[in-house]
Length: 334
Length: 228
Image (tube, rainbow over all chains, first blue to last red; front, side, top):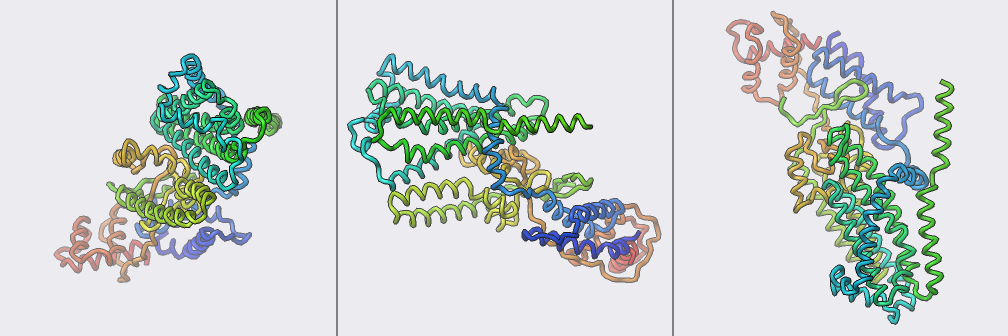
């Protein structure tokens, strides 16, 4: 078949396909009887034929462009983002953490063991607090958590609570994102950010205990600490995941390994962001209430830790087992 | 061929060309986006300044959104194009040519932080220099490429002359050259077309034919090959 004949035969179809692409690009729906994927395959076939028969480059190029447009539409993700987010938070994320349980516990250890060591050092030798925190930070902390301060026992107005909410959201999530990005430096960036935060936590706790402000300090941090610290650990875990892909790619090339680990890493990061975002309103609106008795705040704090732990441990388990069983059934029927 | 086309094989067994974009258009696109970011940020700060503590809280929430999510929102919902990329005729897609997903867009934009290191985008710059698809670190981790958007190609029809069969059999390669040269007759100067026609086998043309006759018979062959 000559090129002209070929064009005469298919031109109407190409033009119709182009119209369909235009409709889809403008987020409209096609008529029911149009089989877009079959039309796309036909264009692909025409392109292959045109290339193989040495038809003119102009024709080949216009078919390539048509095929590329169809390709973009056919392989678009059509699931709603909202539904995917809900599914991820209720099931996907806790499952993913459980799947990477080893890495989770390792990262948790990397965070809390140094924190504990620094805490013990400062507890044993109070002066060490100034080495870890610096005198500026130490005195600022003392000021903030001094029980005789007015603003500890008085409730802040809602305006400044909201201001702090915005600040926590912006600051803490940005820390999560940078921790993840630090994974690109073979995980070292993530490690440094995590350790700095862990040392800060250990040093501040130790110092507050030594100066006797433990009640104001711990009642403040315990409730929101559960999602916030867990979020921090998981964002570091996501960073380690991609960092480890670069250090030990296994059976893949480094490029491939990076790609694969990042796919899982970014999902961990999304979960970490969710936990951190959850912590921000608790920190701004609950932790700041100074009028409640410490026992109430400790109780709520412990409940908060239990909730986070059971969310990560239990959520999505039901689906996991039923999925397994349906797989088994399918397997059996084959 | 030495060009910036990266071929992608699709499940349908065809190869789609992706025309990857280099450093300069991408830097310009980034600068445009940066300008938009600063303008938005300035307006936000100005407006929220009137609202006291509540305003400064809201400002930080909105700052979070425009600082981290501005490129992601545009890339995912606007066909892979931030305003800067759109202005430069660029868009970002997965390296297999499919539209960018939320996760990939998120990764490449968060990892801009890593590309910034150690100062002023040195890592990203070096990475783009050494990668054949001009990928920065974020693109490598996300599996994305920045390409030129397909421009509508002007259909330049082959000039209609009476078809004539060439005296010798042409290889597929030579047939393509003849057709390509005829299709580009409006884009190339007369002299350049003549120069290019010299690359074709000499036996194709009648002996001692003048240069303008050569082009005429070339167009006749093209019409014949096309089947007009």
